[in-house]
Amino acid sequence: MSAPFRFPRFFVTTPSPCPYLPGKTERKVFTELSGPHATELNDALGRIGFRRSQNVAYRPSCADCSACVSVRVVATEFKPNASQRKLIRRNADLSVTACKPWTTEEQFDLLRRYLSARHPGGGMAEMDDLDFADMVEQTPVNTYVIEYRDPAGKLVGACLSDYQADGLSMIYSFFDADLADRPSLGTYIILDHITRAAKSGLPFVYLGYWVKGSARMQYKTRFQPMERLGSGGWTRFDAEPEPAMMLDSLLG
Figure 1 (cartoon, rainbow, N blue to C red):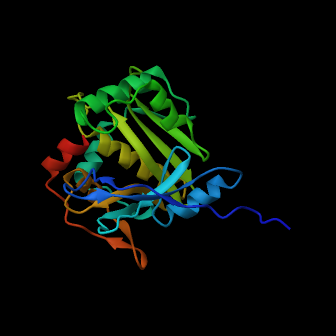
Figure 2 (figure 1 turned 90 degrees about the vertical axis):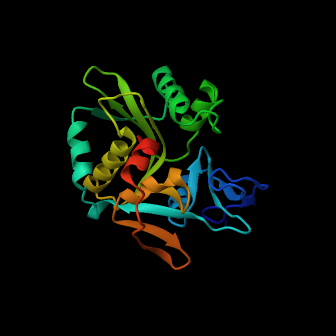
């Protein structure tokens, strides 16, 4: 008698420089997502802190550091604050479409402009159209590209998102960072995901990892209530937010 599915095999990467904390190294444990049970495996691994990249699920496994903490917004209890409500009203004219995970030239052009404006010299700076297609289209799970368009039909934002059993997992978002009349588009994309998850009865929006002391990660604490994953499971997390001006400059 054969088992209904094969237990996944896990591997560990070699150490490399940490992208979040200077002087630290990072190491990841990962497994392949494939076969008829890839969705169930991805859901289960997501609940214990794994993230998806193409057909791989991974999580940090650093020998001397545990700074990366998985965080998720409790979407069904979220209530936007005054500035977030204002941002939602300001972008109410955007049309939002959940598209199948197929790339377009328009998406890639927006990504290139976003990386040039926000992450020049970063790890994705040299990404070409084939790399982008791999990032979006190589998915064994229920994945969408959520597009945000202005009234003229121009694409101003997008997010690669997984639909999981208990929530939405935001894999990667990018947007037009040069629109003076639409500041904080990155924040709005997160707010929109929280609203959509709650309306769908999904309790959580997964935001990946939070790293204390990493300025580029602090924006995640602005979406409360939030939970973080620790040795005892998921618990409520109310970190001290960084100044809004600094966060807006990072998240846009």
